[in-house]
Image 1: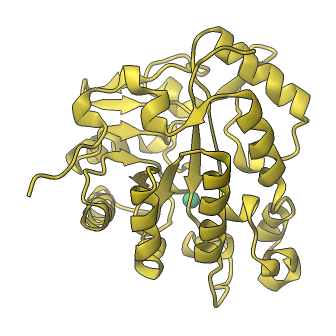
Image 2 (image 1 turned 180 degrees about the vertical axis):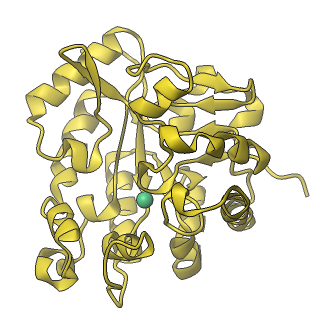
Length: 287
Ligand SMILES: [Zn+2]
């Protein structure tokens, strides 16, 4: 069980409190734990023999460029999570273009490969800002992994679509994995959403998807797997949102180990290879 379908693990390389601050939702934490947490996560991936897709935001590129190189050198896929970790609706189209382009260029300089896969911060492409897809195309993005069910419907597909599809022929949209409850597609993407869902239920959902010969995708943040000790001091952040989010710090250590035992797991690029063209999976940059 449940067959040889390869599924995708994604990591958003965010510092919890720092990202919340950048999004205008909380105070600046004053320090960042994400580099240490990501280092620990990379070691855990090595121990489990896993490779994942890392969505890397601008603050990570600035603070820990060497770790981005380590990700790529270790066989992980490096993808863009934008420069500023702010909701897309906070940008004008011109500002958003600049943000995504800057992120792509910075990552490509570090890893020496094309970076054409993107995920919006905080799942913030919504049905009200579908213009973002034209901007992503203009910025050179060829694979998007931001689409929650409402966006998938806004792009003309079924809310619960699990198969990738193309936007204007050139951009492959890989929808966030969903589960149908009473005929309604709910996001089932990992992270905060799945943290407290019983293992048996998660297994039933994922087995069902793989039985249809389709991959599922799930994501988490480094602090959800390998939290720095400060993440345990919830009051540090003085933000109810962050405290609630931090309450499941570390839970993904056991979730990931369990998933790795049961399912073939890898990068987004490898799990969805049959929907991607060679030009949309990031070749080496010719020099
Ligand atoms: Zn993020």
